[in-house]
Amino acid sequence: MAARSSSGVRPFVLGCALLGTIGIFVREAHADPLTAAWFRCAFGLAGLTLWFVVRRQAYGLRLTRTSGPWVLVAGALMVLSWCLFFNAIERISTGVAIVLFQFQPMWMVVLGVLCLKESVGRRRVGAVSAAMIGLVFATGLVEHAADSGVRQGDGLGVVLCLVGALCTACAAIIARRLRDLPMGVLAWWQCAIGTLTLWVWPMRHGWPALGASWLWLAGLGIVHTALAYTLMYSGMARLNTGRIALLQFVYPAVAIVIDRLVFGQHLSGLQLAGIAVISIAVGYAERAPRR
Image (tube, rainbow, N blue to C red; front, side):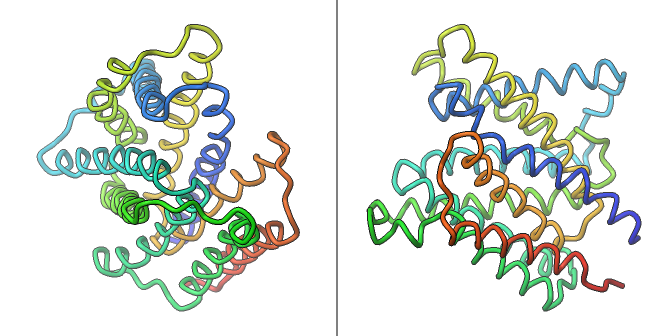
């Protein structure tokens, strides 16, 4: 069991790290948020479909009476979480939205105990709490709140973030239940649902100009959806909820570092300390003695 759990760390962490670079593709695509979300699903669906066809595993996409409802619910929850996030950042600042969305690890811990009857342990609960505090520091909100202030918006924005985080956590719990599905099936259905439900937005609000924008959007779908979520779901099937909740802090940590390296955003001492707290918390819990 320990070997199975350890084998899930690499694909999950790699998937989270890939998601951390998504900001580069979103900025370079210069597309409306929901239009980018549709392209993300559409190109992801195309990439995963080609992958299944080449490997002659398309038969694995057929849903059974047992797994079908769970797969559809998980896919719908992920698409809903994306839409909730995009709507939330219109009401509250992006930094606040990111922090609120990272409440997901706590939802994971709670759902793991209630739904999967897993024992998390005080050590992991403490590590997740410490990592969340480090994330708040790493975003720079503490320092900039006094200067520019947090943009005042409807309290609905906060609710949207928390509900979106809950949707993502529920989808992760479902992925744990569907551990016997072939790799990539859950991500394929997630992309299929998003493609069918979000196509109205670019149809009504216009398509991006042909050229480099489409290439960045293609990368958004193939790399940050098809590949990243396939790796993450593959890892989730082998990890308990406590480790998933903790390891997914790799995503925001990488995103913050990318902002510094690629976009030249200065990181203060407090932000660097926040990243260090996240790293220490993850390392501490991963080195903890496990049965």
